[in-house]
Amino acid sequence: MVPLSADEIAWAAQIAGLLEVNAFKPGNVTRLRDFQDCGFEDFLVSAVAIGPAFREAAHVPVGMTILRAVKDTHRLVGTNTNLGMVLLLAPLARAAGIGHPGGLRTAVMEVLETLTVADARMAYEAIRVAGPAGMGKVESGDVNDEKIDITLRDAMKLAQTRDSVAREYVTGFEFTFELGYATLHRLWQQGCRFSEAIARTFLTILAQVPDSLIARKNGMAVAEHVSELAKEILERGGSLPDSRRRDLLRLDHILRDPQHLMNPGTTADLVTAALFVLLTEGGALGHFRSLMRDW
Image (tube, rainbow, N blue to C red):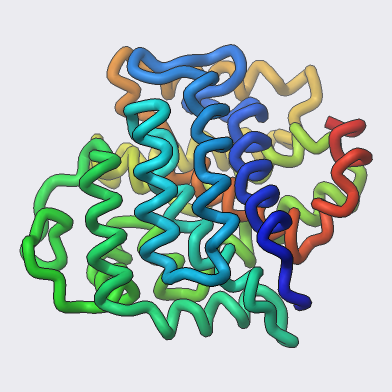
């Protein structure tokens, strides 16, 4: 993979966030669905806010990109709209800026191997700034610990069994490349309308990977039940034609409550990472006009 320019990396990160929030995904903020504490416009602004940080991502430590992107977002919208997404995109963006003959995944694996204690400290600070819901407290590697003496990847290893974003750091972005990107690219190549491809990719990930945010707020049994509901839609042929849209609307109704406790936010973050890969290594950034014509 040829290294991308600073502008291309920033565009890909921003556009990935914009595309994700514009596609209909049950239980998430979309064009027609807001939460009590944040709405569609907040996510649009958040996608723009990360641009400056990601424009420098190839030349600064991963932790610095994470911290700057989260601080800039918090400055503009004042709530956590994109922490998981930023955690996923930062190493991918650095890898895209470095390039590698073996492709983006090989490049990101090398980036992950070089993460430092300083990266961990900056990422932990970003998490505290964002203040994500349902974090709780753990004995080792807690984000509120004053002294961090392990690398960011080692910190993610401690959390990999309870958080899908952390697991990506350990597995070389397995879900992003082998599930999310693979599904998204296949549907795009098959001529599926792109908004439908995003929604179906979301369902595919949710069906196979119980959502970490739902699990933190409600327990793993509830997260697994939601995955079963997504799987049932796919098994009925959930490629999102009008005849099956009622399945998505029904799932959306199930996943909505005033406190948005059932929000599959981690799944949305994984979709955004897959979109970044499609835009960069997958070549969609160079075909953006035709992609939007088929929205």
